[in-house]
Structure formats: C-alpha cells, structure tokens
Image (spheres, rainbow, N blue to C red):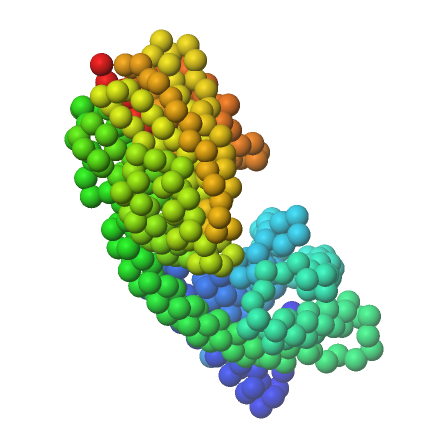
Length: 468
C-alpha cells in the first residue's frame, strides 16, 4: 500500500474522491431511470467515476479511519479498483467513439477484464495486495499507446463537439503514462499528475456531452421540420395516385407502389376513355424523397393535360415532354405509356427512356420486352416518340414496372435484373395478377436479404391480364 498522507494534506484528495464517487453513483442511478441499455457509454462512465473515486478514497488514512471497515479490506480495494479501471474506461471509449481499428478498444477491455479478474483473485488468495501492479501498469502503458495511435491516425468516430474532449484525452493519456512510469521508478521524482489530468478530462467530457446534447436537440428539431414537410408531401403523393381502379374484370389488374423513403418519385396513373379502353402510365423521377415527389406532381399534371390524346401514346409523351421542358433543373423523368383496348385486344405503347415492359404469351412459353426506347422527358422541347402496336390474345399478360424492381441489389451487390424478372414471369406467370405481384415482392425481399423490402430505389409494378 502506498504511504498514507498527513490528514491536512488529504483534504483535497478526500473531496476529489468523494465528488467522483457521488457523481458516479448519480450517473448510474440516472442511467437506470433513463433505461440507458441502448447507450452503454452512460453506465460505463458512471462506473468509471465510482471506481476511480473509491480508489482515491481507499488510499487515504483519514477516510479509512472514519469507516468501520478493516484495513486489510482497503489494502485490497485500491489495487482491485486500479485493475478494473481500464475495463470500464475502454468500455466507455468503445460506445462513445466506436470499437476502433480491428475492434481494438473492445479487445482491450475484454483482455484487461480477464487480467483484472485473475489479478484480483491472486491478490486475495495470497493475501498480497497489488501483487500484479507492475504487470497492470505495463499493460496500461500499452493500452494508452493504442488509444494515442487511434487519435493520431483519426480512426475515432468523433463529432465536431469532441475536439476539446480529444485534447483532454491526450492530456489524460500523458498523465496516466507518467504516473505509471513513476510507479515503475523510471523517474527520480514522486509526483502524481493523473488526478489533474482526470479532472480536466471530466470537465471537457461534460462540456462535450452538453454540446452534443444541444446539437442533437437542434438536429431533432430540424428532423421534425423535415418530417412535417414529408407529411405534407406524402399527402401530395397520395393525391397523385389514381383514386380508384378502372372497372376491369376481377383480377385483371394488380398494382404495387413502394417508395424507397417515406415519399418517393415513382408514379403510375390511368387515363380512362371508357370501361373497355384506357391509358396506363408508369413514370420514374431521378432520385427519391421530397424533391422527387414534387417533380412527380408535375409529371402527374403533364399527363392529365394530355387526356384528350389518350389513344395516341407518342403524342401523349411528346405533350408531356413539352410541358416538363425547363422545369426539372438537375432531375430527369422516364415514362412508359400504353393505351389498352380490351375489346379489340390491342395495345399501343410509347417509351420515354423507361425500362421496356414485358409481355407474357397466353401459353406462358414466351416473355419478351416490347417497344423501343425514346429520349427522356423534359430535356429538349421538340422530342418525338415512336408508337409500338401489339395484338394480344386472351390470357396474355402485360407488365409495366420501374427500375426499382430490376435494380434491387443483393448483399454482394448483384442486381435482380430484367432477366430474373422475365424468368419469374415465365415460371410463375400462371398465378393471378395479384398473386404474381405479391410473389415478385417476396422474391425481391429474399434477394436483398434484409428481412423486409427496404429498397434503394422506388418500386412500381403494374400487371395487366387480357381477359377471355
């Protein structure tokens, strides 16, 4: 045990240790009340303060004499606290700044926990307090050098408000290494600087936590404002979707529309002529989120303005192109528009840079892309588009979709691709339009491997069956 100090000289260390212990207990209680299991840095910080405070107090003669605890208990207490101090310290560092390079911080506290348990057990079993102190100090020097390396090479997951905290951490590392070398008699003097370094570190940590809390509140306020905008835009997006399906035979049409974010840029619409003839459009806007949805509203308006040309797909797209020209800034729009005549079993379609639709034959032996691509909408005012005429048979299926279907990525980066969608249409096209649309979503969910359908791009799928 280190030599006890004179009572008068223990006033400052006694107050320092008591403040550390009291604050540590307060932080632990607060972490329990706030249920900080998701934020282990808070209880780790509280435990670190308690251990440090108890270690300081256990080494003071005035504190020992004021308690009924036998001296041998205090003789073992301060080195055991010393052994476990790096464990909670690096547990805090891991959850505050990240696990480090190659999970270095996590490995440090795990290794030192094993050492601390063994060292404490040996101390108690042999009745020799601090028997592993030299090994502990050498390990601490190594751990401090690892922490210093992380700070120097910038591998800490820091925030702008952590600059003062990082500087104080460097100071604390220096004082810890200094005191370890003093205990190892590497220096001739016997001065402890770690309490000063710890005091500065705790003060800077408090400052950093306050700054981080304030910044988080500002971010939450900004996020709340964005959510308010998103809700308003969501209402706009809902208004863009058709309010009711056409009066088609039951099961002849299925639609799936899933945005990558709360709001998205994909759009589908129907332009009805009568109960047997209608136009159907699927459009995609570059990007997603609020900006893409706002552009979608312009696309919806542009399509609605062409309803008098519903039976002429090329002219519908040409009119939309003129309407959108000069309004898209850095965005872009692709669209596929098909005019369907159920009675005549004919489809006319035009394509403005969109993924081509798929046509499945009634015998399910052939699924092919149909139509040719024209230029994107809104880039140049005088673009022209070609119309493709198709004669259909009862039982044929036409599938219009957006890039979100075929560009869904697996965990290793492979895209679902038009080829896989075509194969899925051939293999499972005998299912009804509704069931097949659900099977596409299920296959995409399995493909991206996230447990649910979280996409990187908006998804729209329209399935039309030609009735008998």
